[in-house]
Length: 149
Ligand code: FES
Image (cartoon, rainbow, N blue to C red):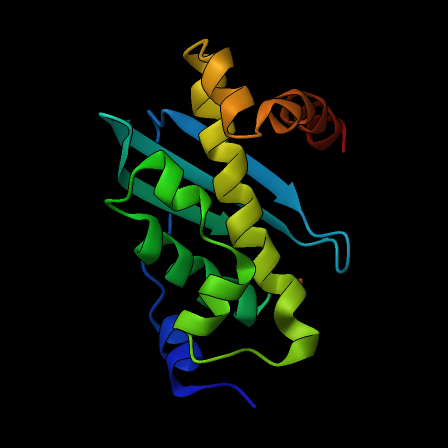
């Protein structure tokens, strides 16, 4: 039921780890299964220069995050925001329908990391223009929840 590409990324995930001096960090919890994902980005000239992830997710979450980081690396922030769970699933040759929620983690965490970067730089205009202003506010609240847990 999984494509060969999904297995390959699961066995050999790209860009796993932490970027200590990240420019943006995004964490999301999956409402379906409760798993967690954090993405770290380094940004130069509004382009994603480096990206890493850490997850407490399942095999599909690992494979989709690995693919999402591969797709996002080198892209501009605007291009990276167009990466959806469908883009990631397609690039992996498809995912079983009951595992599509797992690929939400990667694209949502990436969006949050970009929102975090823009917020830290005080780029309110860009946050609004890209529809990330609400996310940047939530990010703050969610971090509180994660810390208390
Ligand atoms: S089951 Fe939780 S991320 Fe896949």
